[in-house]
Image (cartoon, rainbow, N blue to C red; front, side, top):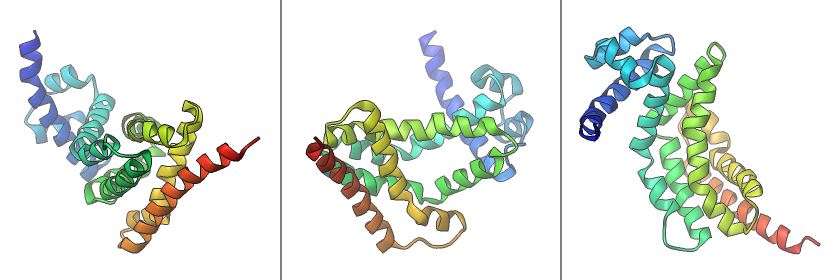
Length: 202
């Protein structure tokens, strides 16, 4: 059984990649038939692997995430101080976020969410929660705070890294390297400053 599952994994990943391209090009309304045609797979195989279109979308997002997550994972696991890990992660996160494929997926989710609210939940569970969990330990170590407070600080840190540059990028405008660098410095500074505030609190 294990051998069979292992042999099926490359096929599953290939279908997920095909699905990502179909959904990005044609929108959330693309059917399982559309994906099956592009992937050269039967509908039966797709339902066996993914259970339906929503499972297919989650798998497509996860596949794209796994393709680009390497630098962020390395930064989060860097053997240095928590601040150094946050600095390295900030660079890796921006490099990933502002890449063409990632921006295309972001636009797709934003455009389809009103008509298909479940897509937003899938995006948050698959992408946002994963990235937050990846850098959260470095934030917690840097601040010495509780897990719930670390989660708040992590979300703040990631939000600062995006800044207004994300809106510019989503609109098709070029991002400014100097502004991205300033956002990285601001994000790390905000986390470090929160540590100082907690230490001085009565």
